[in-house]
Image (cartoon, rainbow, N blue to C red; front, side, top):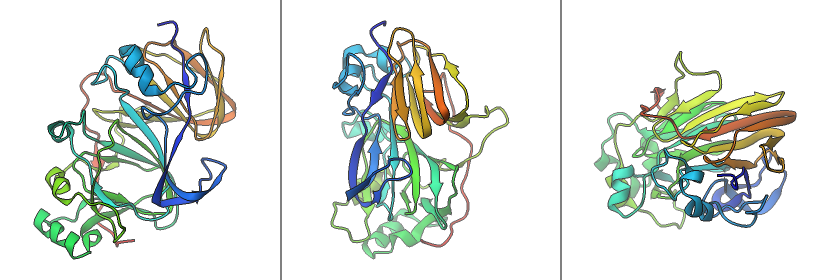
Length: 328
């Protein structure tokens, strides 16, 4: 559809008690209240460029349907990929997300499987994925009431450039001292199981009902057939990362939109019939599925992540889950 073009989106900054006030190196700003997340492709993100400036991504998904969201999207009028930056200065709550079937039983359109790319990890950075081997759900529930739930989690050391897959149903949390890029199904369903005494609502019954003792969560292991840029491919999303030192041309199909996220440096997105878009670290550009092919031209150098929907039937990625380490 000729009137569609790549959208530069305005980030939405979300305050969280576990967040930080210094958002560098992604954003060159220091804020008064702790920011935990920058939402890049939520339905409420507004467009900054072109004729649709000021309108939201959700409005355009509803207006143009498959021409924005792609033929592979599960819903015709709902953008299928939610991308965020996470800035944990302290541990997040211990939480779990339901799968699609459980979410729909509660009236939600989909569940929440996600992945975390560790953009930066300080010394001792850790995440928790699942329960320690042998821990049962009744034992974990009792651990919540005894204020020792985090002792029952499977804690994993992480390093810069790790990619972790977090299947729906996996109890998880993230420690402090890192910056992550999260790609997920477009869902905001979170069941908070334990929050270290913070005065926030818990959802213990719903969360335990959504918990699976065995999932495919873990560090993604790249296969021999994976391309050099591929970080993860799953039934719900595909994530690539590349460093551009010269212009690179990309084809777009009607199957999936593309989400372009600058994680370091800056560049320009060019497509026939549109004004070039300048974008820099922390910015996201959505290329609609019904748009034209495009070129990304780095300004000096650009580290770029590209998120899209997988084509055809795709299995969950191969992962490994290291043995639990000490609680941070």
